[in-house]
Length: 159
Image 1 (cartoon, rainbow, N blue to C red):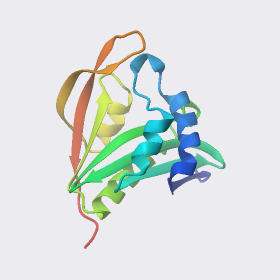
Image 2: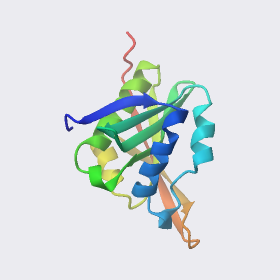
Image 3: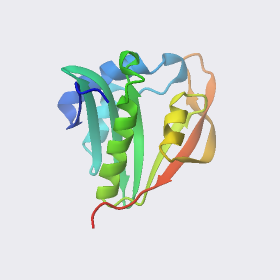
Image 4: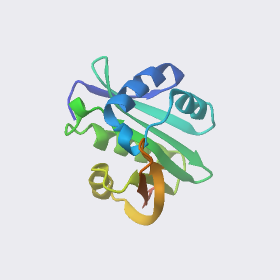
């Protein structure tokens, strides 16, 4: 990871930067991106956190996650194309794993579109495929895409 890259916990004031990243990172054809309102709305819920990666002042990526009881979920992870292949996504995944484990989660779940190149990152990070949701994502043209359900056991960091 570059020395100029910094990860920090974010909140509602960072959603504009999250939307910049999402607009650059997610192709509209797949229907994976969230709206501004969806991002703001989930940040108000308990045990939800946002990690923002910045290169200087420029938003490079983000991860949005939550914990329900003792299970964590990585809801969204995106890195702008200009910052890919620099360790940003790996750093965001590692930070998410650490925060979730420290907060008492036993497992981290995520879903990724079948064919998304991020699948390689998740597999390298110790995730295993648990299932498939057929037709989970609906692209702009109505085409449906499967989601792969992945999870990874966590080692608690609290004691």
